[in-house]
Image (tube, rainbow, N blue to C red; front, side, top):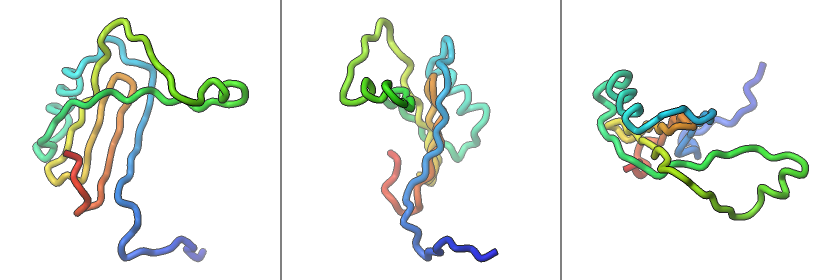
Length: 115
């Protein structure tokens, strides 16, 4: 079979993100993200920073699409866990964790760093 995809010496993609969203983890805090960092990642993952949480995203179909357009607001009754960003020393990889998401980022070498 002939490979019909183009071949690039310098691909146009500079960042790739894989994100998984799930139901909120009960009693989650940034401490859990720190525990993951120290127990499952090696010393190459040297930088950690806190970032604002990302809002959950849902696909809407049919009549639901009408209500999903435009801006919106949320009423929060208690503090929500923030997003933990764990960055590898070479600034090419980042893992982001919050109570409803796990995100893995790859950034092309030589492109502006995550930090």
